[in-house]
Length: 306
Ligand SMILES: [Mn+2]
Image (cartoon, rainbow, N blue to C red; front, side, top):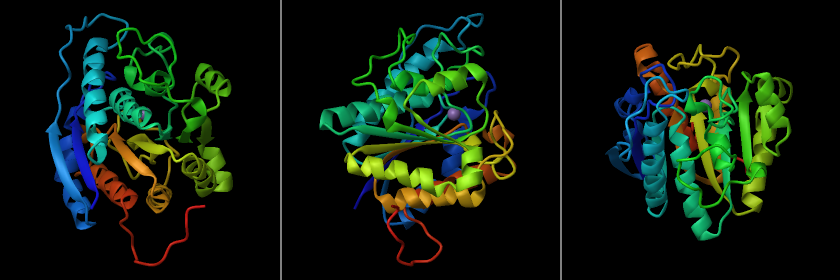
């Protein structure tokens, strides 16, 4: 039986609006552990982590709470690599800055195993900034820049091996400014915006990406940002952008991931329970996670994802 490891990552340093530190306990309260246990997994909860020791941040600095974010990155990188040796980690965020550490950690494990690391980024934003290109100074917009090896991340832990751009797929984009769009167009990252989903459906690009992961015998990290979803079904996020994925699109993505059998690690990020309505966003995220681990409406034979 596969073991799932819940890693509480109450990271709140990646942006200015506070509240994501309440996320891990909201997922527990919404029954994440129970839901996964009901699916037949052994579930371990490592509790909530704290950042590694770090200097105090200057509140006037251009980059918001950079030292704290570096502390988190060090801590989560180690935890991620440790957890990969034992099971499938789910990082309970916390804002998206936690993925600087979670992805670095799981990628270090993959590099050790000689397996290519792939990342599926479900998000309204590209999160491809660097500390030098971010106008807001919010580091939750930088994890894909970091894990692909862009410059400007002095002070952050060194990556075992940067993730090749072509191993990354972003789905759900709808809030991308001009410099970001231009930076994206110069990369090999597969970027799928909401218009592509409207026109051709969400299954086609995802199936293409999953086939690629499978063909390469890759490890698959999925990073699910609450803002991937439409704010009418998932309001508890600081960066609401209208026009997001529907409930069915969200579940279809997770069910295809489950059918593929490729998932090796997962982030649930940007939930801000302070902005939630009676826990409904936390519940939606728990239900999506359960779909990624095999929950379905009927026990019917499903076709392979490809
Ligand atoms: Mn994000």
